[in-house]
Length: 515
Image 1 (cartoon, helix red, strand yellow):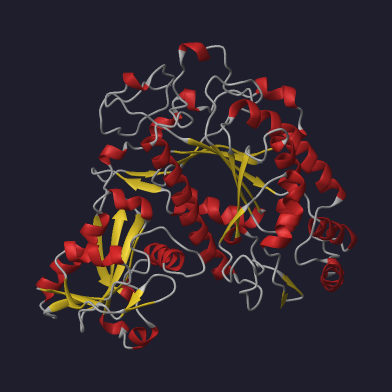
Image 2 (cartoon, helix red, strand yellow; image 1 turned 90 degrees about the horizontal axis):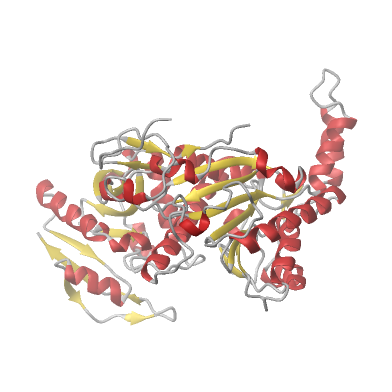
């Protein structure tokens, strides 16, 4: 095995055992959150499809397609529960996760769960066991409406609304869990798919995967920042062995840990998880160092599928193992698994934040934006400028155009301004070169710590001066914080009297910056 990198640029580092991050040239500390992505247990629909394949000889020259379609249509449910086999799997999963999380995860364990019945029933036994004797404090559960399976909720292509928060709470009440809700586009009082107008198409599933990926990264980034600011002890460099931890075995999933780790469990669906993992691995899971060395998310394999990941912040993932089922192969076989842990040095494939591009701005006509950038800007705007999602971003809705203003937009004059962190988009805005109107400004909340917002506006001003097409830039911020930000950036009020709405936003206040 190659030795650890000795220089700060970390060119093509190879994993190597080590005792302390102090031995690395830049004294890099690789704090991370432990993640599990788990597919649901076998559903009644899974059993229907399996039986149909057997009965109608799927995959053979004798395959009866019409018979297969009728059989499935007659038996398929829009939101099925678990099959008998699935119920056993769920109990087996709980038998593995409960001692593993009690001994090695900090409390509460974070759960992000699809709103579909089969995922809820899959994790219910685990939640019930973990919460015993805890007063409901052992689990922090978020039901995410973006995390449902591809195609949505429908029967013979007729849309069904799916469950609302009250119906989901009834399923969870035996566990003692009180869940929170996000991504219910018509509100949690309505079904998670009540916004649907038909089965979700493949492009729509891809768009939603981009949105969920963005939400997931922001969720994890906020936890890392919170842990650092509050000096919380459950987020640390798990690749470093303290003297009192010498007896602990890396691949022992049940032995008590001296330091218990921040852990997040994502319970979802096979196809949609694949779309999200695609983005983790080959989509936006990139970082670019100042020397223009691209680093992709890396696969880590043991020597010999709960999917285990480590998250290091800013879109940096390690995939530690994929599609493992230890709960179905015996809990005493852990000692047979070797290699592929953080203590083998894999975390040093991650570039140091010190050498990442923090705020690089690009400007292009809206119809010339690269597809992967277009997808990310669309997800940003949908997530943080949408009334159905909510946001703690100071940029959200601060400059979102009214419908009347949007009607006046001319796409041929519109530029998209993007702030990148490596290949990840952390902020964007639209500039009309004919009118000088700046709109749809949004910055990821975690990027507020950097100069991303300032870089975005300064780039817009610089471009407008150089193009000499407009004499001023006009904005219409809707929040007090937004107006304070633009004032700091050199914008002055054209009028400062507006009408406040019930949600605290204010209409008709305009500001401008003369060039």
